Image 1 (cartoon, rainbow, N blue to C red):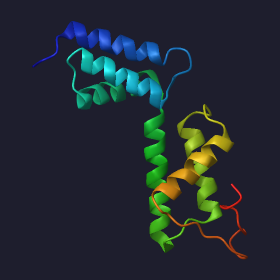
Image 2: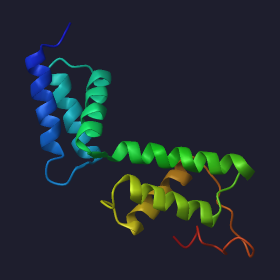
Image 3: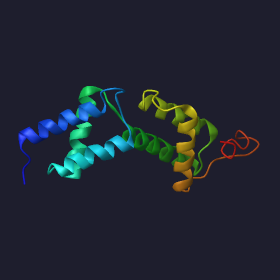
Length: 138
């Protein structure tokens, strides 16, 4: 079933409204956007595509995109030696901060990335010559 131009236009305006105040679409707002899309006959995939398009056009930050970008960076770092060292982790924090345009504080970013590493069972490089127990102390 094709979605009318009117519904699609209203959906685009709804997306713009969600990012109006802070130019940031967090996971809760993203889910709300997708729910509205589905209620209006727009598939999840198409809703995500429209969200991405509007975000790029209007300079909105989508939290999921920042997480995916940072995850890919950490995966690449992991591919080098099977571990993520303190420098790579700090670079990932900086990347996440930049990708979210500073909307999330560094302590929160560090906790998110630590949890990401734990969830994916990615191992930190700790020890006397690699920054001590930096990961354990986060």
